[in-house]
Length: 458
Image 1 (tube, rainbow, N blue to C red):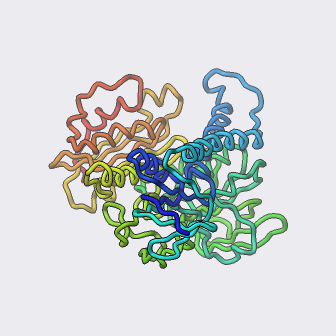
Image 2 (tube, rainbow, N blue to C red):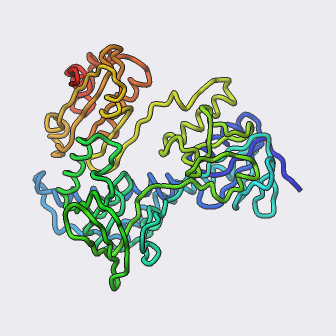
Image 3 (cartoon, one colour):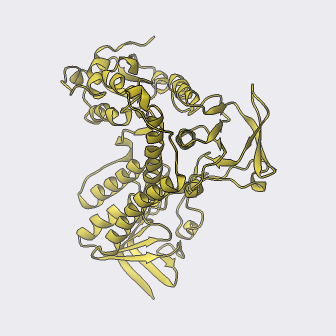
């Protein structure tokens, strides 16, 4: 027997539950399928647990600096069992909230199990078969395990399994010098672990501008994180109870011995075991579900939302996918992914807030450009807090005066960047912000000054 609904949603990440809420409120019956933990990556292995750990690491770091503020403390110790328990509690409460919301949602039936297409219109979950007029895939991504020599001969961690540690590694070797790797590197260094980052590219987070990469390197090295960039021929082999990581770099020893290895080299979509071929759903060479500007797949009644569509890799882009689909289906609007202005943050300390184009991307457009930059050593709020690392920068089109991109690497950068993000979404020229009267003392108060001081880029 096949159970029939108005809509079927597979995956309880950031987009799925909110879409279920909108559809059921509109009177539709919804089947909701989740095979694992409710809440998706953000709640269980991403934003919420990692930023909870970042907060504990920041507290340890600040306590060690207490004398800088005229405060006396004793020896700073880190109880990783307590740190993990706090993380588990915060993450668990968020997960339970999502699960309870769906379980008690009117007109929503929750199925717990692995969903697979058995035909273009039917999905099998345990012993149940489900069909619906509209199907929404929100199945997310998981860590990618690189095919490196010896990787299967040693025990490695990924961004999920490392969250289960309740003891400190003696020496954590992180393969990958991008966003996930950098956050864990600083976090564990502040907990007291020796940390080495191994990155194949010649610099960290290569998608960012070279200056941003250089400043982030300075921040991490100042805290004692060892960096090995330009690493080629990475390989692994057991070394007693430890792990030997072999590498070829322009400088430094050819081997690093670590007690633990974290693989932070990218993500892959959870699309390989859904039977997408049975439904005729197209995926790209990396397994991401191909969608159009309205997030519809090549099958007219099936949509893909969140990380699995390759159109965004953040909680906020997943949520925006829900907003786009709901607005188009229920509100008669014509929302498009291509209208989205992407902003994001790197949660090292101080954080990097980013929106729009990098300097390199802006130069490639061939437009005449304006650029403004201000060091955080000239920001009163940063000086007061004793956290003056980093800078603020913005780029605009010299003719249209539209802001093309901005970066704030510094205290409060993840919050202050929204002033520029909002102006970009409002499509107003940067001159509109020049004479704003922001609150003092804040980081955001320097945005009008930053924009007012922009000069032509060479």
